[in-house]
Amino acid sequence: MNIVSSTQQICFLILTIIIIGGSLGVVLINNIVYSAFLLGGVFMSVAGLYLLLNASFVAAAQVLVYVGAVNVLILFAIMLVNKREELKPIKGLKIRKFFSGIVCGGLLLLLFRVDITTKWSLPGPKAIGEEATERIGEHLFTDYLLPFELASVLLLMAMIGAIVLARRDIFIDKAQINIQQQNLIDNSNNIALIDQSED
Amino acid sequence: MINSEAPIPLEAYLLVASILFCIGVWGLINSRNAVRVLMSIELMLNAVNINMMAFSSYIDGDLIRGQVFTVFVITVAAAEAAVGLAILLSLYRNRTTVDMESFNLLKW
Image 1 (cartoon, helix red, strand yellow):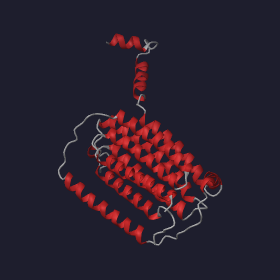
Image 2 (spheres, helix red, strand yellow):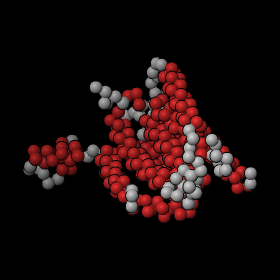
Image 3 (cartoon, helix red, strand yellow):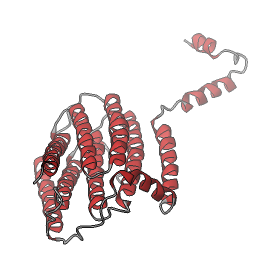
Image 4 (spheres, chains in turn orange, green):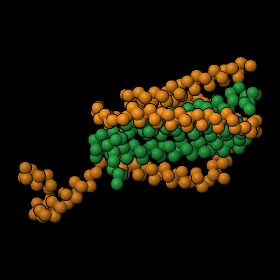
């Protein structure tokens, strides 16, 4: 037990406590804004775990994409749909939560059993550490080239789809204005004047 | 069974990831706020990412294929978050609520 391994173990323990406690808070806390900020904390601690696993590139990507993009997006969504509403009580909610808790606990026990009883082929090859970024680049442009290109197409599709879904529909108003213009050919040069005269 | 040379055994990472995954599943089932459902999905994706990073570091240390797949998962998660929140916004405009129990648009 030298100082390097004990430091790693202490860091792992702290990060684990933050991850588990933070994710419990994300699921259980009633105020959704607190949940979103705790989610950011969980993402940061997961990035810390990646640093413990000798993966600095993916840790940086995790911080940039998850904390910087996904979490901010979630906060924007919370601000846009933030309406204090009392959710209607539905009967059997407690029982539903209890049974789903039992199911999730069973899944957890199953995963624990698989984790502990499986003989992992350890120790594997030595970790390459700092050369990881170059190796990821090699993978991306040789044997994982097709998924890489598919990811770019997927991001483009997601961006266009999100814009189409989230924009306000102003097509209807324009169509109505066009119909008005076609009906009132005489006064078609100024729509504002028509509206005022109708008022 | 448990590797005593490494300061942190592989099993510890897998235990943390499975706990995180089960919390995500529970939140996905039980949340009534639609934003919280999306957050639970992100928790589950992060659990899977921790698993892949641990395997990539301990078992596949020279060809870190798990890290490449983690990058892909992060990409897909970003796309999923964007589209999911856009769907949520358009649902909110039509129904003026974020209660999951009132979204029965696909019910036959």
